[in-house]
View 1: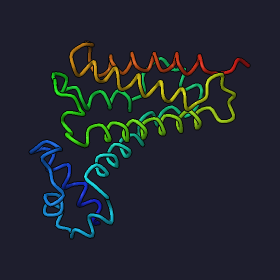
View 2: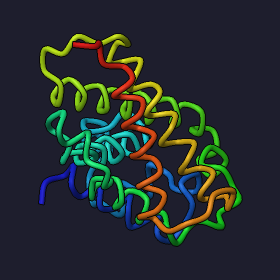
View 3: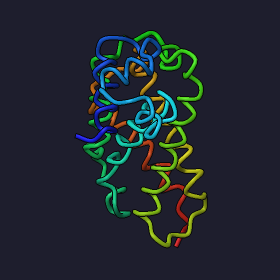
View 4: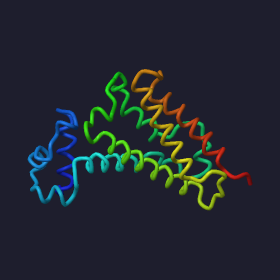
Length: 186
């Protein structure tokens, strides 16, 4: 196993036992059994690990939507259902994500949001190659990212009810409406 993988595994292992803000670089180095220079060769800070892990998760989000026909399907993609299912047991969480991360909260939210927006924009460009848009794909991606974050946040806070499948279906329905409304009429 390479050193980056050991650092990532150490991070996820430590997160099972304590909150993000309680984990130090020294803890990561010790648990991963890497040197300080090796750690910094891969990540400039603990926040870099968190962002990297989110980017890796986003890589599979909406991977099923590769064509306009895929975006027309009423069923939510399995990857979207899986995203909601990942948080299903944490719905009663009252502390915000930002609060849990301490000083890294705001920068983390920005970096994760930007990674999600980039990913969604890439998925749209892939599914609709050469498409003329009434609204630019990046603007659609901004709206989709906001939609995902808002629904996930409200669901976790108990403001929205339903299973992971029901929430994914609702988000997908809204996503489809945004995308199809943004297409330039033929």
